[in-house]
Image (cartoon, rainbow, N blue to C red; front, side, top):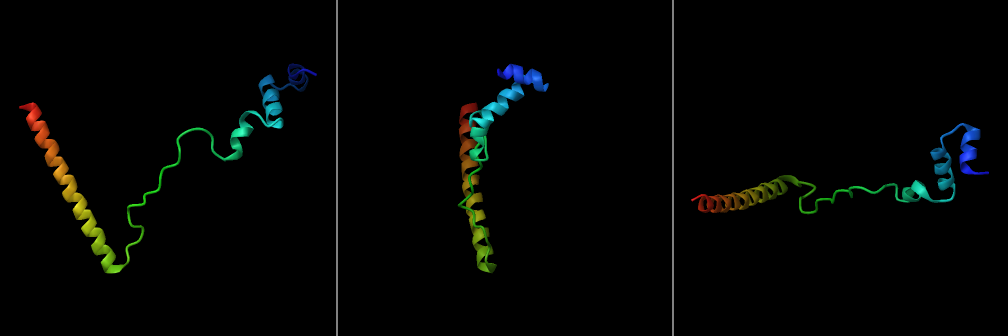
Length: 90
């Protein structure tokens, strides 16, 4: 029996009959469900550089020192960008 005839006999849209047939034969969307994820944006990468645990006073001190080093680096980069912009605008 043709798939269109099956759809008419059952009163379902032909697309549903085609989808069921594809699922039964292992094709269509069922093939993409193996991994549990379809196409699209990949999962975010986990941060490895940040400490996951602060162990007491020494850990807090390391975290503050690291934040201060990062602030100094960012400040230096900002000053370089400002200097370039000044040169371009002059």
